Amino acid sequence: MLSAGLPQGTVPKLERPGPLRERVYEALLELITTRALRPGQHLVESELAGHLGVSRQPVREALQRLNTEGWVDLRPAQGAFVHEPTEEEADQLLTVRTLLEAEAARLAAANAGSAGIAALEELCAKGESAVADADVDLVVATNAAFHAKVMELAGNVVLAELAGQVDRRVRWYYTPVARQRGIQSWIEHRQLIAAIAARDEARATEVMRAHTEHTRKTYHERETA
Amino acid sequence: MLSAGLPQGTVPKLERPGPLRERVYEALLELITTRALRPGQHLVESELAGHLGVSRQPVREALQRLNTEGWVDLRPAQGAFVHEPTEEEADQLLTVRTLLEAEAARLAAANAGSAGIAALEELCAKGESAVADADVDLVVATNAAFHAKVMELAGNVVLAELAGQVDRRVRWYYTPVARQRGIQSWIEHRQLIAAIAARDEARATEVMRAHTEHTRKTYHERETA
DNA sequence: GCTCGGTAAACTGTAGACAAAAGCCAATTC
DNA sequence: GAATTGGCTTTTGTCTACAGTTTACCGAGC
Image 1 (cartoon, rainbow over the protein chains, first blue to last red):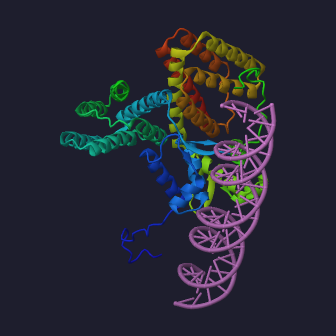
Image 2 (image 1 turned 180 degrees about the vertical axis):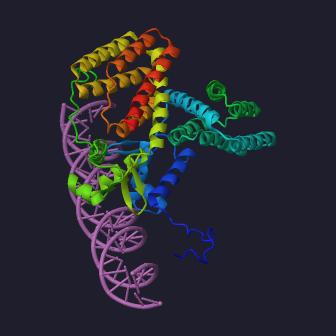
Image 3 (image 1 turned 90 degrees about the vertical axis):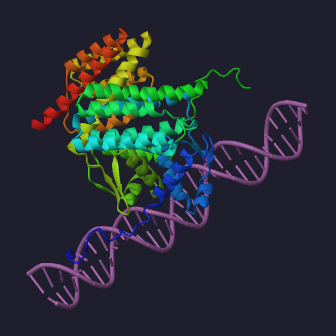
């Protein structure tokens, strides 16, 4: 036992590099979501490897994972290409997203404690002030945090994982336009909190469904713009 | 242009072996779902490679994919372990499955044509006769085919992919007990077809929800048995 | 001028080899 | 007698090398 004399937490965990493939995966995902790598672009393994200062192997493993998660298409004997989203696929993703988020809201209404509700209100306040300050980045970040918190309160890990995937891809598809729903979005968040606090599962579901559908509508407006 | 004189589909695509990693992936998934590889078991790369007659590389890539899909846990610097499902996780998966299947039913009701409905009825008849013959394997297979057909009629590729993943894992968790819901399940299938044919989205959703919830109940009964 | 065939380059798919980390067992010491 | 430390074995993580395939380019022939 070395339990004596070692104040827990002071040891900085001596950050381990972690598997290379993880870091390569995150780096590539960052490059894709930020559009440094454009949809349809051919990803050459050796290029990426050289650029990242590693061998081809970690790059391959990262590409494999990106493939199964739908970020890149892996054509046999030809290589990896950044996935090109179609309108149809984007719409289907939004449908699924609506579904998952609505269910999360229902479960949150069923399971959330007062501490969780307080956390939601705090995020909501933060988001509202960010809107007031016209701090776009903070608004987007807080919005993501709010939805993530709802998902957490739902207490369903499987659901959370799926929703996380879908959410990130939805954002990727639609961020070419810097969308902004402004204050209305946070009014709906308030309604959602009220429904959750009231343990009203049906209303929470409906509010969240309407909320994400509004987001969809906002997205689609840019089509005609 | 070679558009002349080539009846499409007659060219058998001269089947290529396809990437090794694919075949390794399928082989491993088969071994896991059939419980030849037990939950918690340590999967040694070189062992698998030798057993399958390939190098370690394709095995690694297959394990990567299995990891992202939740079949194995990849502990850093320690290797791959077959995922051990907990009761909680299984229940959460069932919740998500219910959600996805219900939505598929709704979309099927909205989109299905008469040809699709006819296909469903055909599968239903096949399933009922299989029940009558007490052909368990055929019942299970036809049941899967029926649900897959509903998913296909829904016309949402994203939804189908997620549901496919979830479905397969649900089956894996609960197949230790050879479950059998018998004829009742197919009565509910008939109700679902009726709702879809009537274009009644709400009823289709509700019937499918009740259907999968019955399945859940059947699953849980084995706990107490 | 256009098409067809051949050649060459580039990239992927796979295999094998080496180094580092983790786990295990035994020997040693308090 | 128990705990610890040392070394050994096993397994992963990474790199390098080679073979197969696809694609593109270029020249010759019709």
